Image (cartoon, rainbow over all chains, first blue to last red; front, top):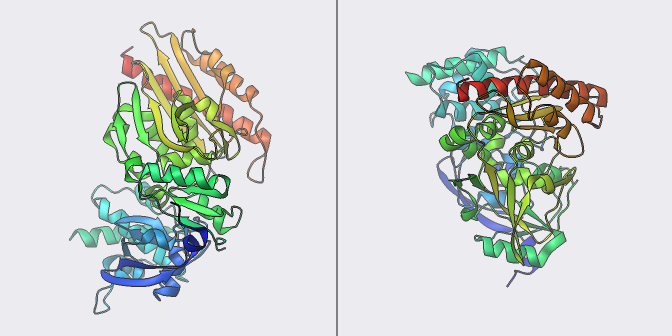
Length: 168
Length: 293
């Protein structure tokens, strides 16, 4: 028997794991995961640029893989493990090697796109060895993220530096 | 930039998904990876009354090697195709084309079935299916039917799937020994939808005569198209640079691309000719290496 439409439209409570912590909050089916993270959980580090999957600002890790959080409904994330940019820095506030590299290499200016770049880089470095990494591979890995300030040179340098520090 | 309200259904089995689809029909959209549907909903170009989210229907995600080809479940992620050894080994054209689909975060979610059912005329996977003479399986209330790629894509964002049918599986046939394939496209920016692209397959016999050719173009018409004219310049002929030139010219002449802000019809036609020539050249080289000529 199919659930009546009025019930299927209603908000529901979602339980999920965000940055290693168990959380629960309500969401209507039409709420995007990006808005759920920002408005319901208060994690405003995930930025919302274009809201149609082009700019990459809202990139997060969903069950270990990078995704656009503006292209997923919050209800779909029920029971999942999510890592946002807030999950990168250590408890004591010291920066993650990727964040440090972006700081060192002038990988950001206005900072709007930075959370997306950090998460895309994080996902990329989880899967790739720093030793055999070409500039081309780095550029392909971050091609889904747009930055209007840096000209990308600093970002590519930052990804390479992060790869080297994380290897140590 | 927020979707309009909809009723949300989350089946966990294929049977349940089909029951929902049968009941809700036109009012419902099937949500797989959501990499095309959700942007359209965000921009309210699509306002479905109901969403049938098949992401928890695990039985629809698989890559199986059969005798005739690869059977790929509709919910198989593009990322899984990209990382699959069996795809790389048995269907090099699919393996090559998948890297042109969006970016890594898009491919983490985007599905094979979604790409085919969405039928964007500039998408890569429909062209691959068409070039390989593949087909899909669609299940509805009266059972499962097989739809050849040539009959699946009807118009821009339009397929021959019925409203109560679910695309469940795609078949990417293997090509005979002595085959080389290539995929190329031109985009404004990395990962964008292609202005024009081409999937090319060439099979040659021991004497170097072409026995099968496929030239499938994307972004060059209302749907992905096979250029029969280009293929006619190849099949039955001794393969050489001249045959490829003739095929590229024929492909160019056979197209009626639509122009938009990113490229005029003339420009797209020109690019289609150039890409066809290059792709056939690469495919021919690969075919020769494979047949040791």
